[in-house]
Structure formats: C-alpha cells, structure tokens
Length: 409
Image 1: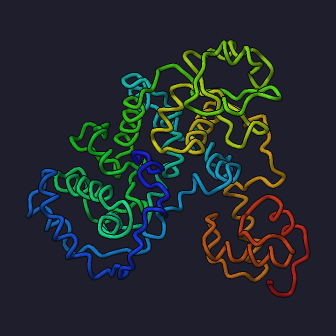
Image 2: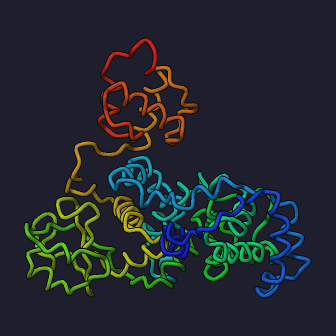
Image 3: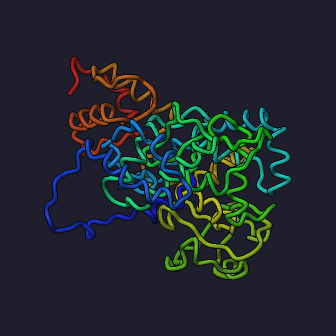
C-alpha cells in the first residue's frame, strides 16, 4: 500500500519509551481525545461541524496497538513471504484480470506510462484483486492510533485526511474497512496518499478507490508515475554474481553503471552478458537472502515500486508477479534454505492435515492465524523440532505422509 513508507514512519523505538510509569490508556478516553483534536482538524480545512459529524460514535480498537511493529515484510523469511504472494493462483487470477480490464488498462498505460502487468500486480498483492480489503472499521483504527500508542501525530494526519475524503463525498463512511494501519481500497492507499494522488478513472466525478476498479487502477499508475516510473524500462533482472563479490556492493541505493557490474563479473542468470537485457541507467544489486541466493540488478522502476511500501521484499513481490503475469518463469536461483515456504493452496493443505489430527484450527482458509500457529507448534513439539510455529514444506510433507496419531500432541 502507498503508506508513505511505514517502515520509516513506524521505526522500532524501544529507546524512545519514557522511563516514567503511566497509566495504560483506556478506550473510554477516545471521545475526549477526538474532541481535543477539533482545532488541529480545523487547520487542515475541516469545519467543526464536519469533524463532530464524522467522529461521533467512533469506538476504540485497542488491538491495533499490538500491530505497530508486526510488519510481515520485515519479520517473515523472504521465501515464505513470496511463496504466498506470488503463487500460481495469484498468477492465474492476475492474467484473467489483465484480460477482463484490458480496455481500462490500455489508456492508463498510454497516459501514465506504467504497464498493465505492474498495475495489476500491485492490485493482486494489495487486495487479491479486490477480494480482501481488510476487516477493521477504518475510522475506529485511525482514531485509536491517533490517540494512543506511538506515532500519534502521523496517524492524526491520516485520520484528518480520511475525514476530509468522507466529508467531500469521495468516500462513504458506512462499511468503510481496511487494514489496521489505515490503508484501504483495491490497492490499499493511505488516506493522505489518496488525497494527493487518487484520480477519477471512470469519469463519474468521484475518486472512489473502494467501489471503482478503474479509479483504483488509474490511481495506482498515477502513484508509480509520480514516484519516478520510466516508461518502457524493466524493473530489473535476475543475475548471477561471481564468487567473492564484495557484499558492500549490495543495496538498492548503491547504483552503478551496467558496464561496472559487467566488469565485476555479473551476468544474467542464464549466463548471457548484461547488455542482452536492454537495461538503461544505473543499476543497484538486490540480494534479499545474501549472495548465495537469488540476486537482481534493479532499475529506477524498482525504486518506484519500493515507494509504494518501503520494503525490498514487497517490491520484489510486485516485480516478480508482474513478470509472471507477462508469462515469465519463476526465478532460477534457489533460496538458501532446505525448507521453503507454502503457497496458499499448500497452506490450506497444511490446515487440512492439522484439522485431521484433531487440532481446532477453525476455517481452512490458508490464513495462518493464532489457532493454526498453535497447532503447528503442537506438531513441532511432537516431532522434537523447534517450536517456532512456522509453516514450511518440511512440516507439510511430514503431516501428509506420517500415520495420524490417535490424538493431537
């Protein structure tokens, strides 16, 4: 989501905690806090009447405070993260969406220079092509984050932006849901980004990224365009790096001319020279699992994708999915692990195996919630493995091949 780089805006800040003991915030304090924010809201152009109208009856959701430091882009192994975001189901669905929305995507690509596959890849990763907008009432989440916990000033700005969008008629407050941090709609814009960069893609006079696919696709292309997208340029290519390459050269920002990389022995993953890829401009080397795993030379367009959500793993997911939507193959270099991640289909198979062993995991939906993680830990304990709750290929194969015990654990 275009979260204005939550990784930067929400840094780990244990050292910032006050040493003075304070009472834990109470949900009942929310109305008082929102009332006190009326003057700040007015400075953003909201009238007092509008602020009171749209914040009346908002309820605190204190559970969002637990999620401030739980971004999966930084806490999940890269092979797990990509296994679920770029699986065969998402590729097939995305190719179907490219066909279904071709008449909308073609003029977007012509006007803003961002190719259809990249726009649809963002849509696929952010909301699974509109299937998953998030479940949390958006006003509740942003109001809570504006009044409690860290980064209140940032979230207040997002809350003010959201109320402005509702007040001006772009959005309707009824049933408005999103992520815990306030991103919402088909391509999960934050409210402030919505105000700045959303466009009317269907010509109805509103910028509705919740109810209008054309608006969402056009707005996503506009975001990438404003982030510096170079029309006709690939995001990057998978490469083969020579043994002994200096690891200090790795990094999206440490860009060098293509000729410099070639002189250092870097080639395309199939062994051809870099010049065969048709890349222009300076290139950065990204190696998310170290130089023994997949490595990529990336262009300015990778940086534009990175601007949507500041994590290299996220940008790689969008980039790889866009290639797959164009008919490209999976990456050739294996991840440096003997236990890779599970696709959504495989996650459902794992849940089915856990349920068959008597574990109360709830719905078999491919989402690894608390109940599934506890069931995994129970099986890991039984097997004498580290009880980290991780779902991988190794556990799935064991549960599918071993005889079922009479009771779990």
